Image (cartoon, rainbow, N blue to C red):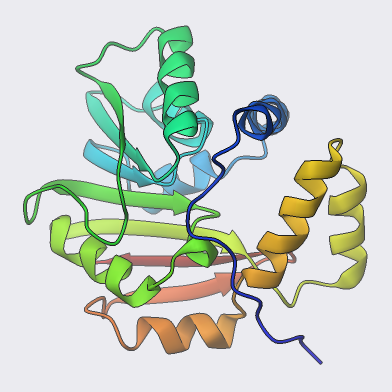
Length: 219
């Protein structure tokens, strides 16, 4: 039986030291090639102007820009220290402000015009949103007609053995605490379906793997 969802903070990682440790962990994931960048590109978010919601240190989006041509990316994150880290990482990748930029902001009220983006993607952010329906409606608003979105997150009903090994492979005690909190706050596939049906997003498919949920759709 799946345990009830425990709501997590919607302020992201605000502590500088923890943000730095998270950056190190995500850099390792990038180097292992286990980010979902290739899947995002394969789905068809591979051109034009994209928005990443909750980029954290930025590696998912930075890899996306690296692997696509004539693309531009904006990342918006609720954590100011994560924005600073992402900006630094973008500089390390050699991207100019014209191609990649990161801003501090709230997914519930995106500071962009209607129909502004060709694609939107996000990883490990859905469970942090205080009002996911409102945030998903914002995704619909800022997407151009025909624009695609890709949202991935942890799943609370993952096999306990998988959860155990994820925790064991996380080096920092503080990050383990955060991982547990994120898993407890994440949604099941059925709960995700219940969220989506109440949004303006009507064309989508929800799939899972052993530890994640994926929402892929088009406006």
